[in-house]
Amino acid sequence: MLKDTFSRFRLISFIEGISFLILIFIAMPLKYMAGIPLAVKIVGMAHGILFILFIIALFMAAKRYKWKVLTFQLFVYSLIPFGFILIEKAIMKAPPKKLD
Image 1 (cartoon, helix red, strand yellow):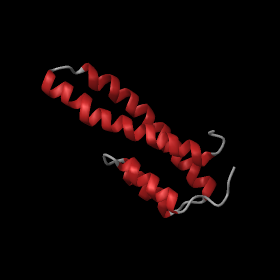
Image 2 (cartoon, helix red, strand yellow):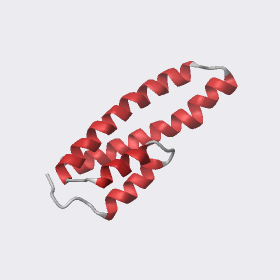
Image 3 (cartoon, one colour):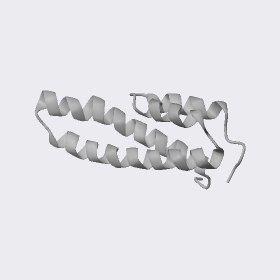
C-alpha cells in the first residue's frame, strides 16, 4: 500500500492537514471559548509531530522526484487551512515519473 515515497507523502500530507483543521476548528475554540487549554496541548503536540513528519516526507519526495519549485509551493500550501487539498491537486497534476 505505502511502498513508495509518493504514496507515503500523500498519506502524511492528508493526516497532517486534518490535524491542522482539528487544531484550528476544534481545539482552539475549546481553549478560548470553553476554557479547556488541554485540548490545544494534546492536539498541538500531535500536529507538531505530524508537521515534522510532513517536512521530512516532503524533502524525501522532492529529492526522489526532483521537485524544484514545487517543493516550496507545497510547503506554503501546508501552512494554510485546507492546504492539503491544494497539495493533493498539485502533486496529482504531475505525478512522479520515477517510481520506487
